[in-house]
Image (cartoon, rainbow over all chains, first blue to last red):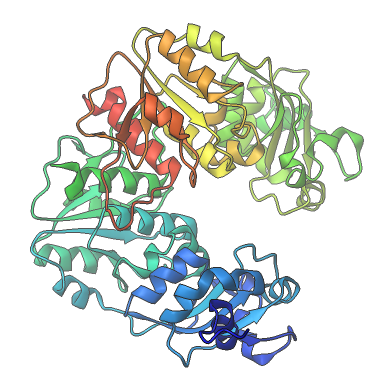
Length: 281
Length: 281
């Protein structure tokens, strides 16, 4: 007896476009994603995995251009497919085709091409900050793992935004998004100009800037936050430039003198936890 | 006029053994280190880079079996070479040979084969703990990056030891040592048996165990440490097993309800910073 209501599986199968040729032009955006990871993409980016896809679909600042899904992952994606606009193609391939296109074994089996509607300017982003706010400012963070981890921490502790200078790497690179567990698509950010310009804009907007440095003068467990706080972090190795450390309030995470070396993302986690509204300060 | 005192360069050149054949048997321990990274080595391990080498040379719990150095890195290594026992061979090769042996571009140009004198047992390590102590206990940490980062944090906050169950990965894998910036060769650790056995031994030794969990009942900013504290961390994904969470004091890092996801290494950093003697608690 034929059922009157189509089964979930039927609906999903009707929504997808099966592709069996790895050279199919419709998949060009997914080709060799690992090698192309270091190339700018005009606001387009690759999102991997179901958790990241959920964040992408829930943030109106981003659009989904298409999905590429491994055939055996389709069944678990019906909720996400319902959230995709009908004109967004959903391509479905076998494991063999998926790996051939991506250029390496794609264990997650779920890829999306996303697009940022328009990059925010530092000014616009600062203008949207609430009266009580926690911002993160980054100078020269060039490692995508660190960038992704900083976003993950910022989301976990509900920082209001991340501002970064133009020498910092793009948080929308595939690996940064993946390491951020989607937070790079959640926490509002702007990336432009020099760190001096960002510092000046934050000060003008009433932010109390805490520059994190192993040589900082105030212990973070003694520093008292004001209504608007910005945590300023520099790259590992060189850290923040001296001229900034000289003119700003510097804070340190108290630690061993014989091993005073923390990863910058870990430092961001400790400082964000301390200054977030969740710490009860 | 000939100088009477040999120049630094001469001394270093006399100390090293030049090798020009990538198939030379004396380099077999260095062959394809990346692929062999996942293979047990009877207490032997690969240390990379000058910072890690310094830690290796300074810890009597480890021995150096040999060094492999890129020719253009020799000049900066004279201090380290003086610390190497005279019977430890120092092999020197060109960039071409180095990359051919390692199986990938070895940017650091400094490799050492180290050996652990003997693994510590959990009992022995707990017996050496001072009256006031901070321990880290790990259950099922299987990612070498996380393991390395946890060691780095433990060194930065001067935890006294790291105890881990047999399902946790080996901190002496090349990548874990590298990510730890040498801390895997600095912080005393033991790895054996079940997490239940470790918990029981810690309790018997008077440690107050704080089990970290997003569902923990006490906020870490409200928890008060006792003289002997052990921070217990479980793997990402599954976290700590329920039977442990039910019988132990559980603590949580307070964070967002809509994005309650921290990397386990970052969580270790936040908790270690909070409970270390440096926080002033």
